[in-house]
Length: 140
View 1: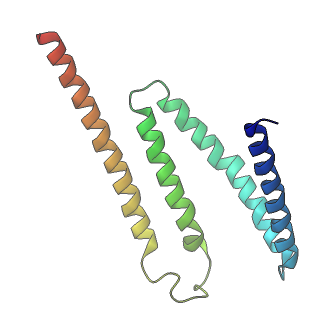
View 2 (view 1 turned 135 degrees about the horizontal axis):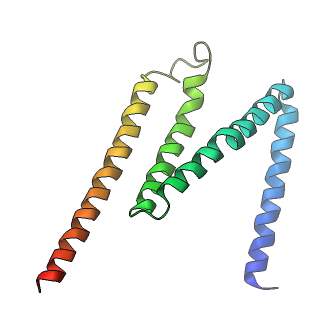
């Protein structure tokens, strides 16, 4: 058996083990139905909203200069939103008073603006550098 096959089986076995752990933890929950409803909702939101949105953005930026940069910025922004959104959408007061000590909605907007600004500035710098290199190449 090749090392890649061993790694594939090891990772597959780890995945099956983690699925079993997740199923065991769901059954140990006091309200497993609520967890299953949440998981079903997450699946619907992912497949019905997020995946089509990502595909649409991918089609819009396909073949354009800097598409890798913008894809990276979108991955960062999506990760930040993914981490922050559950705290923002939780109804009622947080069970732990230290869970939301700051205005996370405003801070999320600031971080997303910083990611977009950074990506935009880097994109402009790359375009400027390319244009400068073209001028140098035509002058000589």
